[in-house]
Length: 251
Ligand SMILES: NC(=O)c1ccc[n+]([C@@H]2O[C@H](COP(=O)([O-])OP(=O)(O)OC[C@H]3O[C@@H](n4cnc5c(N)ncnc54)[C@H](O)[C@@H]3O)[C@@H](O)[C@H]2O)c1
Image 1 (cartoon, rainbow, N blue to C red):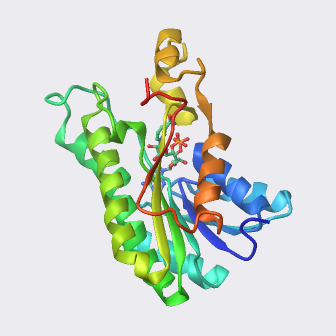
Image 2: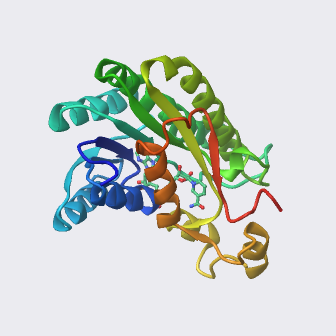
C-alpha cells in the first residue's frame, strides 16, 4: 500500500475532491483526519472510510479561522499520533461578478478560505512535520491561478496566491525533508461545479473549450495525483504546480 502507516489530514473532506482523496488515501493504508466546516459531511466521509475497512476520524474545522485551523492540526496529531500529509483542499467558488462589482465582503471571504486557509494549515502543520522528520503538503490551487476567468477576480487571485505560497514553503522546508506541491485542477465534476453551472449543467461549448477530451474531469482523477504527491513515489517533487486539466491550459 502506498500510504501505509501514514497520517493524512484532508480539509474539505466532506465533498468532491476532498472526499475522493480521503477514500483513496484510506484504501492505500493512511489513517485519515477528515476535516470540513460542514461537520455532518466530514463525519459521513469518516464513516464511509470505516465501512470500507479503513481508519478515520472527522473534525469540524473552518480553515479560515486561526483557532480552528490550529485545533484541527492538534486534534489530528493527538488522535492519530502525528501528521505525515496535509492536503489543504477546502475552498469555495465565491460570488461571481466583474472586478469593480465584487463587494469587499465577497472578496475577503474567498481570500480568507482559499488563500489564508491554505497558509494557516501549513502554519500549524509544518512545525509538527519538522518535529517528525518530514512530510508532504498538497495544496489545492486551480487553473484559475494560471489564467484569468471573467467574474472570478478574488478566486483567481487566491489560487495564484496558493501557487506562490507553495513555492515559498517548498524552498523553506526542503531542508526538513518536507515536500510542498499544489494541484491545479481544470473543470472537475463536483458540488462546486454543480452550484456554478446551475440546473441546466455546463454549456457544451464551455466543456469543449475546457478540455481537449470534450468532457469534464472527475474527483478520482485529481485524487490519484494527490496520492502520488503524498506518497514516497514523489521524493524529488517539490514547489511545483501540477496541472491536471484535460489540456485546458495547453489549448
Ligand atoms: N471543481 C472544480 O472544477 C475545481 C477546479 C479547480 C479547483 N477546485 C478547488 O478544489 C477544491 C475542492 O473543491 P470541490 O470542487 O471538491 O468543491 P466542493 O464544494 O465539492 O467541496 C469543498 C468542500 O470544502 C468545504 N469547505 C468550504 N469552506 C470551508 C472552510 N472554511 N473550512 C473547511 N472546509 C470548508 C465544503 O464544506 C466542502 O465540503 C477547492 O479548493 C476548489 O477551489 C475545484
